[in-house]
Figure 1 (cartoon, rainbow, N blue to C red):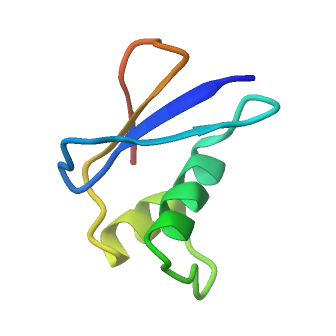
Figure 2: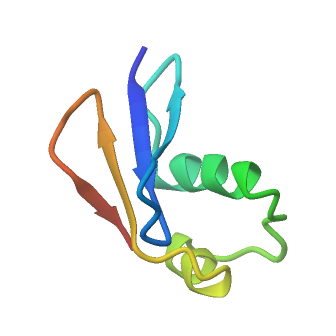
Length: 71
């Protein structure tokens, strides 16, 4: 089970969650939106959702891997 840690809006503490399989960037962003209680709204790209909801920068690690940036 991969463990994800996601930082957004320069928060000091990451959002942490585990999944049964590896998650795509869109699925990782869905966890952020759910945690923030933000509705996805009209269809949009990952980059558009990050900009629309002022989430940048969105960065994550998977199982202690190197830091990755979304968008």
